[in-house]
Every structure is written in structure tokens, then in C-alpha cells.
Length: 302
Ligand code: PEP
Ligand code: MN
Image 1 (tube, rainbow, N blue to C red):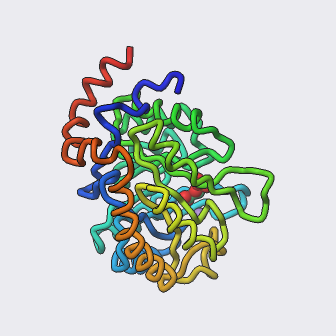
Image 2: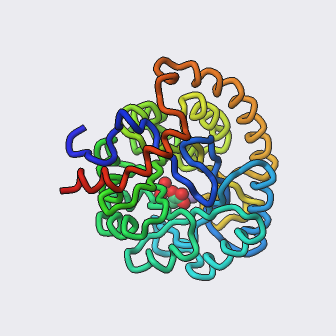
């Protein structure tokens, strides 16, 4: 793919491994779960405890919400970040939360373990440069009107600032189909794995917007070889201040996690048998290769 120096697949580094407080993204299948928005301490902490018990490895929750209407709930801001911090202290789960403004990157980064760049900001190049400078792990969602090449170039903006910790997340694109909220493009899993060393997650919540589709799309993402999922879960979806129709209840999430665990046994073996997998560097070697990245960056960014 044209112009990709750092995000492109490399023969010595087929998959990057991104260490988020000991969670090895790209090496283990990781589920990020939590509410769309941080609303109250009770809602966030109870959801965090429940998703951790069910097997989630990171907690998501928006304190800054990019909403279609300026009158819709915009998030709690700093208060929300403090609630997320409390949830992290209670559960040990790393926090994934969105940053929407270049002026907020450094202080939001003091609370977040992973900074999320939302679909609407995927091509906000000054924001990408700023989160690149932060050095924090970044979850870069695919813009709803963006091609794979545009998306990977946005990852390149972050990498070019010397930050190798980029996780991609497909969350559906706009097509002529309006039955689903977006059209979840699962073909991006093998496409990203073919073109890049970066891990790719699937967000079936925003990807479909339909509760009954979250389980089948999650299982399909696993089957396709995704590195993880980002899923919205709420202790009481009908009372949610945003995306109430697509958030799983805790029992629904628990059931999904059980099915994913079963599917992982099967697909883990299947993926291990994929052509070429045996010749790929193992996770340990990949981590070693990654330690060369700063040098590779220096060579590539001229
Ligand atoms: C979100 O994950 O909270 C979100 C707003 O998603 P997206 O940017 O994909 O719409
Ligand atoms: Mn949402």
C-alpha cells in the first residue's frame, strides 16, 4: 500500500504486540467491555466488576461523547475520568476512553491506559499527531466513510510520532443498507492482517447497533482471526444516557463470553493450522523484534 512506511506488514514482524498494563494485545484474544458512557460511579463500577468477572481484560467507558446532536448527553468529562479511575482501582482493569480534543490529550492520558480515537475523529490529523506524541496505547477506530488505505495512513500519523502502540478497531461503515446502524466490515480482519502488523479489533455494538447481532458478529470476528472485541455492556441498558438499544446486559455478556471461550478452543487450533502460521515468528520473537522498532522508525521517517 502506497506511503505506508511504519504501519505496513513487515516480514520480521507479522503482528505487533502491545502491552497494556500486562495485557498483551496481539498475542492473546482480548475483550474490552463496558458502558457506552460513564454515567454514575455505581453504574460504572458495577459494570466493571461484572465484566471483569465474566473475563473482560479492559474496561471501556466514554467521558467525552461525540454526539450527533449538541443537545444530547456529552459525557461527564473530568468527573467521568475520576469514576473510571475508581473502577480501575476496584478491578485492576486497564481503562479505554475516548479523547476528542487535542487540548485534552495530556491530562486525559493521565487517567486512561488506552486513548480511543473515535470514528468521527479518525482523520483529525492534529489529534492523531498529539496522541502519537503521548506515547500511550491508542485504539484507532475506522472512520465511517474511510477506506482501509485511509485508515492505515491515520495509524501511520501516530506511528510517525514515535508511538508504536496502535490498535485498530473496525466499527462499521456507512453503506446503502440502513437495516443495521452501520455495515460491519469483517473482511477488514484478514485485510489488516495482510497489509499491516497492527492488531485489529471488532466493535459489534456500533457495527450493528442491534442487540441480537452482537453475539453472532463477535463469534464471526473471532473466527476471522480478530485480535479482540470492544463491546458495550450496561447494568441497566434501558436507563442508559447513550446507545441504550445496543448495550448488552450483564447476563447477556456473560453468556457471550462463555460462547467465545468455547469458540476460542476450536478456532485457536484452526488458526494455528493456517498456512504459513508455523513460519511466523512466535509471540516472544515478535516482542523482541518490536524492541527494534525505534530504530526502524528512525530509518523510515526521513
Ligand atoms: C464509542 O466507542 O464510544 C464510539 C463513540 O464509537 P465510534 O467512534 O465507533 O462511533
Ligand atoms: Mn456507544
